[in-house]
Length: 219
Figure: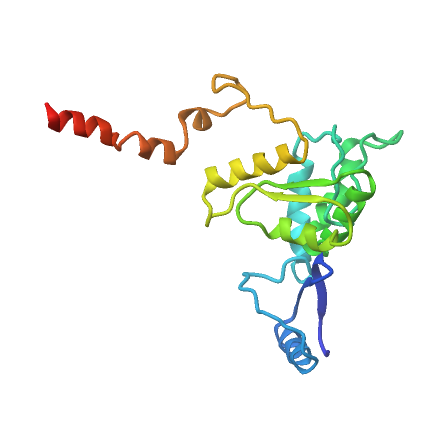
């Protein structure tokens, strides 16, 4: 392919997102069609995770340097290289000098999701819970670990609804032998919005029970 094209997102062995110059991408799609590889054009505002957006790294790093950062207290992988962030600072290095090399360039670098999941699995992670809408990361994780024992769980799919998805996730985790601890509503771990209750619950209180309506008619 003539022009600039790279693998921008290595999502799984079955899916890779490419990005780059428009004409080069179109040429790549033609090549894919010729060899029977399915491809879909994604609607995005910019060619993220390529050198095309590298100028944005400067203000991003400046902003990150203005934050009060700390090394992680739990193991966290970086999508920049798929490796774990350092959990301690080497002698003579600040937190920013320790963390930012893996964090600041991520906007113009390939997302190494496949490597991230592989490294987490190698370190003992066998259950992967996706927090957020839909199930893309759950699907990718299952594709990456297709031949390995694992559990990938989504928690919020629009077609199921937030509450139903979440309860299904709890059920899956319980069946997998994970203890389910549900803090009481007054627990400060919950946000004010959470304690106020979900929209589905609010709507249900507006519907009067049929038995109540029957009793009212009978009187």
